[in-house]
Image (cartoon, rainbow, N blue to C red; front, side, top):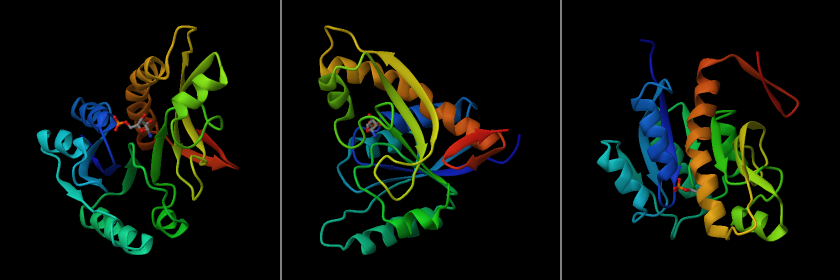
Length: 202
Ligand code: GRF
């Protein structure tokens, strides 16, 4: 077996994508291990999900710190854990250009809409309210913008007439749990490059 890539997962809330990633790693579908889960909220349920799985966790609250100070703490924890890749999984803070530049093309995010449509908060509700008939999720490399980096993989779901934002979000979330491990597997096991902003797998 080859060496496992060490991942840091950054989260702010529930942690279902962390669980999906951890389970895919445990099944050997993603040649990686979660070396550390980091949250900006000490009480994030996702930290408990990580602990249950024996994943080291750390909470780095942003309160009272400048963005620079907070990010310096997060970056130091990532480096200390020996993590090479950073997976954002419901991390509700925008990363500064300086932080992104520290881990070039090694930060990924999952967004619950088909980007570039509906970036930002409450993407499922935005899509529902707009009236699109298809939505889904996007795994993308992170750049200094908000949900604006190169797309790695997308999965679609139908939007049904009797959907609420909640039923749509639940349908999308099922696909997120497939998409995130699948995208990481591709990035870690296949040769790829950026052609402009297109992620191209050789
Ligand atoms: C997901 O919908 C993800 O796409 C978005 O935040 C949510 C996090 O959910 N970025 P969870 O904490 O992984 O359950």
